[in-house]
Image (cartoon, rainbow, N blue to C red):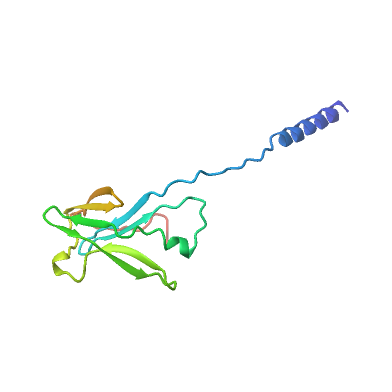
Length: 161
């Protein structure tokens, strides 16, 4: 009988402890000012491609209208390989949704002198002027110097298949 009484008391204490720990937490995230987001690449034999967008707040509801407004338009973007520099041109690419475009910067295909393609082992500097602020990044296309020195195989142990 004493054991049942102790078990009942423990059950009541456990229930009360779970009930007492319940608390409603309301998180209200702070709204942040947009930041510039740069996604750029240059590969061997390919022209530089740069997307410049503005960040969105984490809990923002994504819609096609909202996504079409995040592109940073009319930025001045240049890429240099150390010997020459080219200014990139803004292109509007249809997104597949009527009246919506994706904006990307790349070399100006109408100007042969403005062409630049990536070369392995070369260092490239990206410079962006947007709304009075300057952004700079440097990258190098790695050389493909690694070569196989040997190649071999052997059957897996204890596997008749």
